Length: 140
Figure 1 (cartoon, helix red, strand yellow):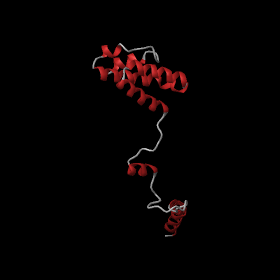
Figure 2: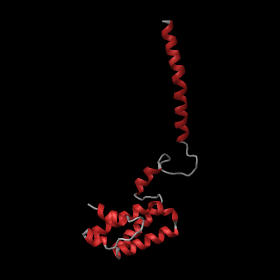
Figure 3: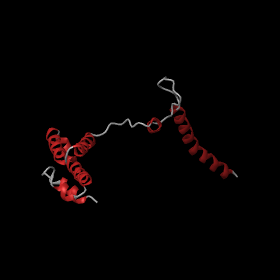
Figure 4: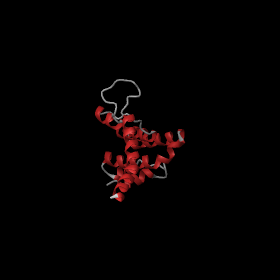
């Protein structure tokens, strides 16, 4: 009987501090520290974004550039978009690591626009080690 009481005591000695720390942490997390009244202080950023239906995070510069160049390709031709890509990489060398990815996407979009790889291939230029041509060839 004495051993059973000791085991229960040891178990409580190990579990009780953990329970107290967790409950204290949860209590502190619920306190509205900013003092600004709102409907729910526990909304996470992802839940807030999902409820508003807007994406608030900034897009990376290479994603913005890719979208802009794809729009140029649709409105004009792939040659204009490839020239824009070359200028952007020359102006901002940090975009060079994304150049292959962007040029390949432009090649795939050109095939979609013109319907054939041969017609899209006419616009190929040596931008980003011929990644545009690889994008044209890879399009399925």
